[in-house]
Length: 266
Image (cartoon, rainbow, N blue to C red):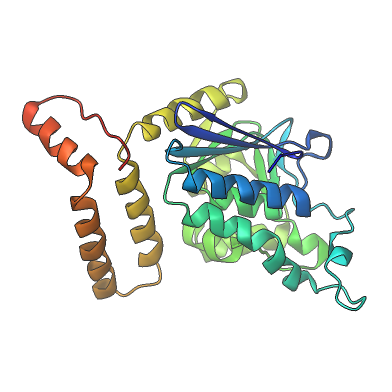
């Protein structure tokens, strides 16, 4: 598949996906969402990719859904367009599922505004490294909608119900520093150092035990909806899997030999 609204490249084990509609602050429509979903599917299958970076070109990460598009009508049945909620299942939810289920670390390099579904996409990444010029806003209240793209599930778990609901009610922007103070992001860096820091972090992850990273992502995400006993059982299953990997054997030998492990990601 060729890409028109994103850029996708693989560099030294890192899959770099960039929204590329800078003229509209990377507003998301059907096409850009489908292209991004396809890129994540490729990254999931491609053994050369051991970490993924998601960012936006230009001044914004994503300004949210492109409200000027005619996408709803494209999915009409007998002339009746789907509801706003039904449209989520067709477009944005497949992307959110790809980001959260890919068993490789995903870094969100948030270079500017992340609004609406754009904020939801940023929250779906595993690690968020943020420009000091970035900001977040749900914005759904301004158009009388509820948060979507998983934001109503992820955000309260990151910062608590009170702050999450406040962000929705106010529709105000949350600065990069406030997002860091509240635990919504992992790191804030000077704007001109964002990609340098992000790629250095991704490079370390790409050299790591990819299988173990992925299995841990699965365990931690599943644990949020499991009982303690269920989580223990999940750990047994996944640890058996990890214990048969090349990287486990290499890690043990490196530890015994007092040298740096050379992981292959399998």
